[in-house]
Length: 253
Image (cartoon, rainbow, N blue to C red; front, side):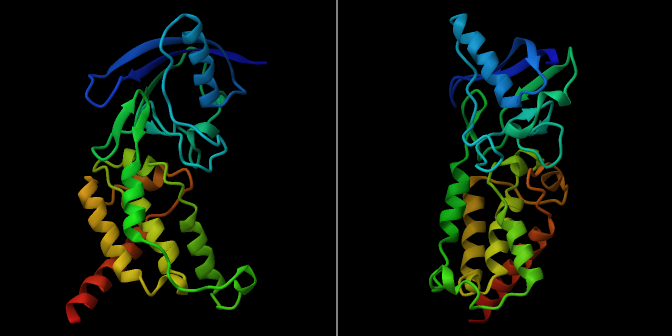
């Protein structure tokens, strides 16, 4: 089993109102078969045995589905690999003797809870503002009753892959949530069941994002580059079109 020795510079912060700092932690004998989170587990076990405070970090399914994990590794959200969450990033992508800078998401809307853990409830507020689809679609057996072109269904499913991890916000120089919002808007706006509330949804979600303190999109494309589900910024263009239709539609009424 191949192993590497690493030096970690980890952000440590007790709470939102406490001053944070970088702490240097040795990580010797790390198996290259481990995931990044498993490496942090090993480091935390050693810290606990030494009577020190372990590093707090978010995790849940560890299968790249839940969107809980996330940290900046050497300035990159989820680390150096494309289309990969932090829990799927393996230590074989690093070299013996590397120094890794590990920091939480940096955004005004994402307050640091502790160490690498941030409060992403701002995303929940945006989703809640968008509301539900009220169109009655019947049971599972009625799924094919409404014809939807395959290309449209595929595009909607691509948008629905968003796991809400926040990498787009952390990567954007404006801390914008536009990619996250546009994925949620797209996967509903593309389907006929989502059309009745499309105008209200996009207006409400954008207002919620502004209230939470997210910035606006300036087409840097950093969000697209670091999205673990590789969601395209073409969804932002669709959201902007939905917004314009909603604004001009309400102005005519």
